[in-house]
Image 1 (spheres, helix red, strand yellow):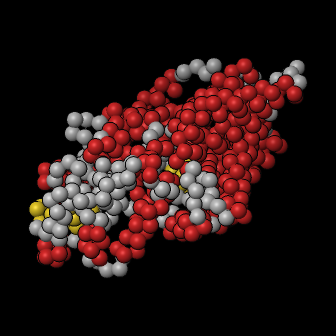
Image 2 (cartoon, one colour; image 1 turned 180 degrees about the vertical axis):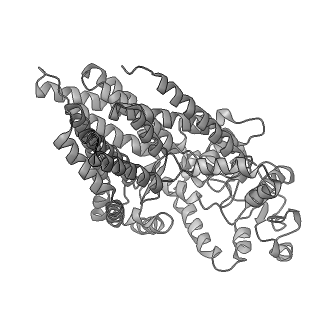
Image 3 (cartoon, helix red, strand yellow; image 1 turned 180 degrees about the horizontal axis):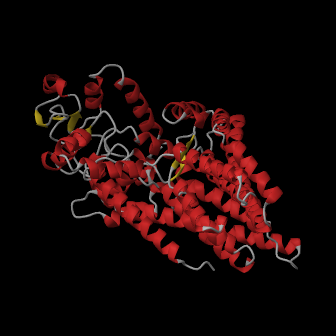
Length: 558
């Protein structure tokens, strides 16, 4: 059992102060919640639709729970619980920022102590883990993204999970309970939970207690796997229900085209993505250094360090198992000409920077110990260690802290504040105006990405760029085809959004082109509100009676 030292207390106090500063700074920089990155904005919108389904009965996507049922996680439910009387789901989502930051740094500090045994090395480790390291497929490892996300929350829990898992290696009676608890991680970030479970299951499988026969051990491991699957089943049932939609050959081709154009091309051409990943992390050179770290552990490591190195490679093997399942699914889909079962599993590549950093700094730790005697060799090793730290620090990103501390600086000067946040301040004025100028349930067309209309104003949209993500998961082909058509049409000309918007039969059209004001009044209707950035127009082509297309019931959706 690790004892809490005076150094640990001071480190935790420092982490707590840092988390508090980031928390209030990020909320301030969000300008009352209007400025969220796309994934958090989507989760805030899901929470709004979950808490106020009546407000989104005519929304393009959120009218049917089947479109987002697999995304109704404890985070979404907690966001709905935290929302205030003003219905601002953006601020509700951000209320967990400080907790997320504190949990992440504290958890990786603990893991650093487990791995490196020295507090200062653990502090270096948690500092690096607080950065963001990007990989292809538009994903990352770390906690330095502008907003916390389910995957960064998972990272913090994963660090605690590894500490507990390592402590239980010689306590097999606890393995089933541990694997059952691991299954609960799918409700935080499903694809990451699969890689985590596979890795620790392999660690347990390779830790057969003395005196236990292999047949008995394998039966016990089978039982542990069943415990994981048992807690996974409720989520799997919802996911399989939403994915159990048959597609024709033309539908599959269309979905593949959407995968290439709406998502990163690495999803559709996964071999290309994997080659790009290997090239990127070989040239950096993270992977060669991880190989060097592995060699140092094997050659000069203590028995404990060799055991840690062995288990890190088992965690890597578990991640590779998940990648192999992804490739198998993709290959079967191509051979049998069917739609793939899952396209996100490839994103578990994001674990590899973490594993590499663990191996590299374990190797560097051994090198520091090997050349601990005074002299030029010790100085050279220290310079090398410092170079590793600086390299990884400069190679990562900490956008959340940067934006948060910039807010404290910018708010000291009104002119600087306006220059930094002017566009978002105008956006906040627009969202607040929607609450006053429109009625609940009235639809709005906006030719871009502005989820704050949903998660703050609680108004339904007839189009959204991010909506394609949910539609792809739900295989909502009619809506996805409409979205694809609109995406193509909107780039035809700067004013194409007017005709496309009217085709969706909204109650209002919101434009971000004040120069189109006269055209909007001529083709759409009267301007009922405007500021220097936005123009809100009443759609006079829509009859008083509600003739907008209603969202079909979930059972009839494709």
